[in-house]
Length: 277
Image (tube, rainbow, N blue to C red; front, side, top):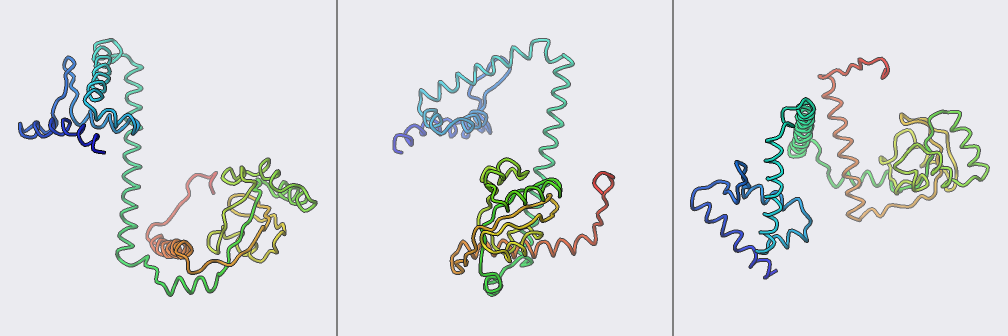
């Protein structure tokens, strides 16, 4: 750490000297009309591995890294003088990059807006979860289950698979080979332990009523047809922070869904494309 601090001193000395001269973004090097600025140098450093970053903080490392950036600028300068910038292919690809970037900015802006809006709901107390609410939920739903499932596209296929499994076929093997749920198929169809509210609604009441070892289904959901095996049911450790945090997430989602349902009355939904109706 001491060695790294020593290496940083010349680096910060450059920044301090530039600040004293009134330079907002000091130029470290020029290649023709192109420049390598302090901010670009630091941004490029942030893109390399941590080990190489430590090396770049040494005097020899900084110079070597600057040489790399100089070479990149030289390649760019020569390319700018070529016929490529005037080609139809370059202009078309550049326009596509601009469209892609605009999409990323739009999507990022929408994600930021909704995230900050949810934060405001929390600050306003709309999504507030109290200890009595958590205790009440755990009193009503004191257990969690471990299940496996095979997700199929059609009812006939699900009936056939359920028949094989009830006849003794290996559930893990069938799930890996047949299940359309990519998130669980590799684990033989197994979910992590699930409490009430964490199971999809079409399966929840069934799996909590099933006996351990029982195979249920087919059960239809919006995802397809499920054949389910219940592997265990255990009482939740109600006083642990992890359990209570899981309940907070569930109850917060319920309150958020209820609030959103109220808001939807002001924003009617219309599915226009026939294939989605």
